[in-house]
Image (cartoon, rainbow, N blue to C red; front, side, top):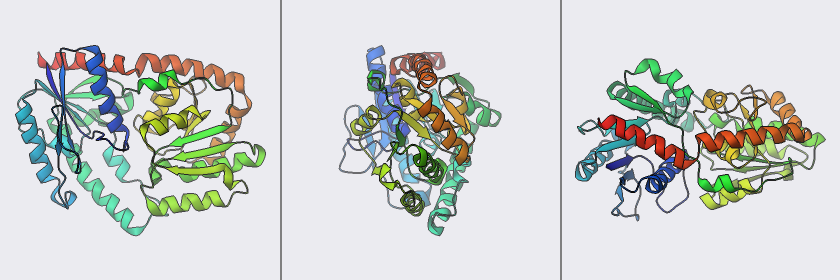
Amino acid sequence: MRVALVGPFPLGRHVDGGIETVMSELVAAIARVDDDVSVHVVTVGPPPVDSTDAVTVVRPRRFARWTWYRGERRDVAAAIERIAPDVVHVHGLNFYAASMGGFQGPVVMTPHGMLAHEARIVDAHSGVLERWSKRLRGVGNLWFERRALRRAEHLTAINAYVREVLGSRTSATWFDVSNPTPPAYFDLPDRSGRDRLLFVGAIEPRKAVIDLVAAVASVLQAEPAVTLRVVGSDRDVRYADEVRAVAATSPHSDRITFDGPLGADEVLDAYRDSDVVVLSSVEETSPLVLQQAMAGGRAVVATSAGGISHMIRDGETGRLVPPGDRDALANTLFDVIRQPRATDRMIERARRVAGDRFHPDAVAAATLDVYRRVRR
């Protein structure tokens, strides 16, 4: 069987987001699980990266957003025609999905974010241009999302939240397939401490990093040994500046560090050196950062935003707090730090769940089953 995977893919550089990790891990896992399946990737990427036998790189055009990615969509469609796959699997409901209109074979689509929801999340600390740019991106994403859902015949849900939000907007057949977590996370050694906190993600209003920094500043007043390491790019520069300004007001500001974006190996090292992974978002679909924490035996403290409550059971596999409640976040961090036995039990349960749901070989097997079913 010949499969074309279409969407963002890492091209010898820093991984820019969760979908790139998913695509990369799925390609490798499918090769391990079934060597009778050949996978060809189609992605849009900048020079100097060239196409290979396994990856077709479509060059982005200037002002692509203003033309609704018309040139990119045409080139992606042409690449699919050349590959002539038995099944196409598109990751994301953006312009990649809109490129599939001319393909006559089965197409599987995987939504990775609630595009319309995310576009509405702005912050007073963001710059005016950033707020307007995000709203314009939201208009385009919503158009692509609606078009994809209207045409979709086969969709995979990375968790139940996706079905809840999108189920009424499509007549497609749904399949439940989680995102894969890189195997290296399952091999992380245990840690006995509970005072090294880690955040991994872009610094933007959707992630509510200001809430996290303010909560940790409160924790530091009673637990000065605690550290918070923030790993991720300044996706919203004005907002990121405000996050750093809030951190600087803490008497223990040296305990809160900002590392910027890191490569995959460096992110893995950040998990290795951490005890607790924290996510303060106001909207999420199925964040890989939590899957990686569960697989790696790191305690999880997160908000109950979006699909997170479908991943973490409060008090069983992690701790959940309401989005935007800084006091609840600080108090829950205190609990995790000061109640090591209860935290250890949650970590053990979470590791078992991660092995069953998120190991890439299990995800690849489930994905291949979907491909075979849609070809019938």
